[in-house]
Image 1: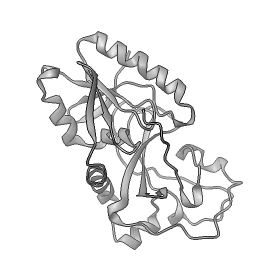
Image 2: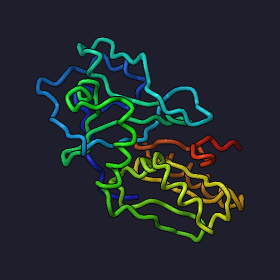
Image 3: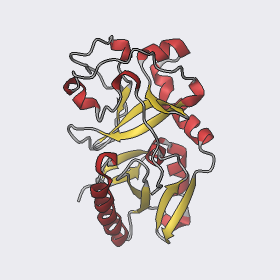
Amino acid sequence: MQMQRRKFTFGLLAGLPGAASLSAYAQIKPEPIAPPPGSKEQIVALVRSFQGAVRKFQDIKPMTNMTAQGIPVSSDQLPLIDTFVGDLDIRYAFDADSGFRYLTERDLKTLKLTRDQLLPLAVANYRKRYPKLTVERPTAFIGMLANGGELEPSMMLDVDFWEKEKSRPLYAGGDIVASAPARDVLWFTGLKPIDNVRNLKTNTERVHKEAGERAISKLMYLWRNKRWEVLEG
C-alpha cells in the first residue's frame, strides 16, 4: 500500500463517507467559495463502499432519490453516483492536483456531457492519467495493481483489462477473483486452485480491518461473462 495519502475535497459535500448517509449530514454548511472548475480530461470514477443491500451481480446505473436534507443546495449540486456490485458504488470526480471533487449535474451541463458518457470517459481518463499503472505479483498466483494514484480499485471498471488478464495462461481459461479492501488496494487471482482464493480472502479481511475510514469491501468478486458478481462462500 502506498504510504502517502491524497487529499479529498468534495466541494459542498466535503468529507461525505457514503451516498446512503447523505441525509445524516444536515449540519454541513455550503462553502461560500464556488468549487474549482474541472475539465473532461480530469474526470475519473472512484470505486467506494456504501451502506445498503448487497448486489449479487454488477448493475451499473444512476443512483436516484438522493437528498441532502437541511442543506440548502439544489438537486443539480448533488454528486453523481452509480450503483455497482456487492457493497460497492461508483462516484465520479475531478482528479486535480489539489485533490478530488465530486461531479454534479451542473458540471455535466457545463461540460456538455451526457450521463451515459461518464463511465467510458472516466475509464479512458484513468489509463491516461496514470500511465505507470502496473501489475505486480507478490507471489506467482496473486496479482496487485500499483502506481494507480491510490485509485487502484477503479480498474475494476475496465472491461478490456480483465478480459486480457483472463486470457493469460496463468489462469488456464478459468475465472478471476478480485478484492478491493482499501482505496489503494486491488488484488486478484484465479478461481482455481481454491487455496489462492482462501489466501486472498484472509488477506483482504485483514487489510479491510486495518484500513479504517479508507476501507472499501471485504467481499470477493468474480469476473465472469464480462461483469463482476459476488463470490459466495
